[in-house]
Image 1: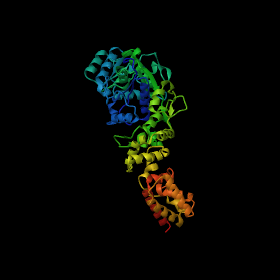
Image 2: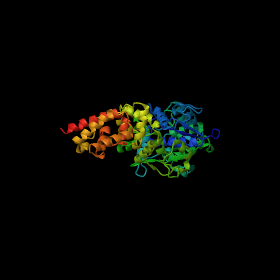
Image 3: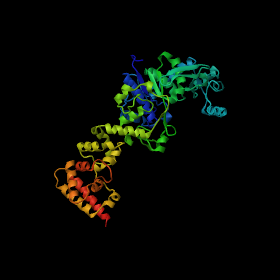
Image 4: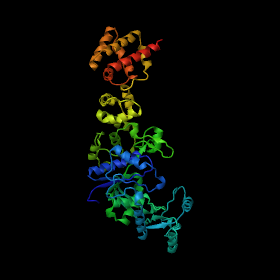
Length: 512
């Protein structure tokens, strides 16, 4: 441990989009580190070169930046415990693997892929659908435990392809305390001899994670529950290489469930919600998977929602800023049971954050969305005013296109069917006179417009209530938005009059 300082890590593989489960792991590590004045490290686990995807590391960095949970040390930022890409640490792993062989805790295995497949096929049964390379099998295979020493030396000298496997001891109970699951124990007789070093010289996750956590002085290892069954192997490696007193505290986070089992990318495609933090384009097919950012989520809402997928503060409060989460987060309140992802609840978090956000803070993301839809934003002052008027009606940032776009662009069409039954020559005349009055009116104050509207309606013998819905549709295009006179005063008299004339023209044409 570095000066008794808490050090945690998020260690994703650069193989594709960043699933919200991965971001939650990063978030919990970040919150824990910040709460204890520690360090949050990003380590890129790129040892499986067959699955490496160009651009995935940059994507991970961008996701963490968008979420506001950037690391203290990483390949991008550097740090005294680097390098932070496993592919750049390759010589280290081979050295430790050889030490394990020399100490009798690992062995060379020369089995070919074909031989391994034949072994699995011959042993496969209903009771054992996935045979493992374990203490029952290792004695029947081609490895340094079964071959004569001179044969092993010859194979190594000839650079015969081989892997290094851990030698799992028989009849041991491997126990540890998980910070989330409590006391956990495994029977070593059902743990297989995992590959530690592959034939290409790259380590597997099992070897690399232990070595890197030790050398980077990681004090707490929080990761997904799917790694719980691998922990016995990691504990043995810690014991053999570094001693159990140096081992980090373990915490295995609960699964996140979708509508049918563990949440997956397929769920997003099937049910129409994002599962990645940001848009991800498949490097082979070009298929685009939409992210929470592009769907219209605020970063604060996204991490607030993620925090509650497996944790709660123990109170009725649900809306928390990142700073509040740092103060309140505790591993003790992380649930053992799987968390169910609910997209409607996720949208509720976002809606609440939009409501509570200052209009000025929403301007930048709304501008970007408007740019994508070719909506001009005029001045910042005008945009801020419009956001203030419409944010209560928006669940997603993308909703501003519908809920606020008409403040910047005259609607291309209006809801003619709603106006048609109520339209008459008298109403056409009223709106003609009202538009003319507006064009000469120096004041576009809300109260002034409302008074003029109602006064002219009364003079013409029409109830103002019969006109306001028509007025709204002429300005907005449909029956939505804040108060109609607020809309008119924001648009200004000239633009309001222009839209009224356009509406009159459309409605009168329908009557011909």
